[in-house]
Length: 86
Image (cartoon, rainbow, N blue to C red; front, side, top):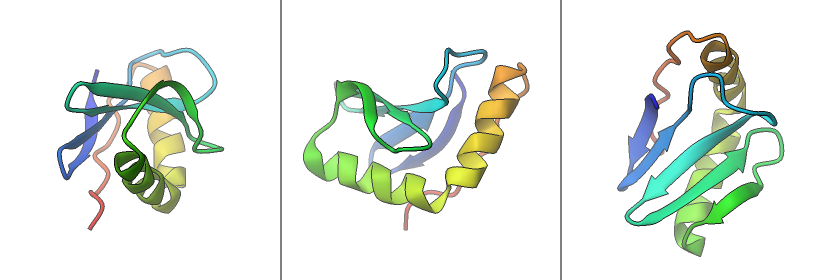
């Protein structure tokens, strides 16, 4: 599962050839979640509210790049790194 970004202990990644809808995976400590790219809603798992807020803020700034990475990973190409939240 390629890591595409990391900030404040939050790790963002995507699986190659993952199932629809387009989403990314988040790890923070022992917590994990899958976030839909278009709506930024949690598809599965859970995160602490503050972490979820940071992830949604970051993802809202990078939705086009996330979709490009989804397309790449869907086609078994390596996704590109996305700058962290600053």
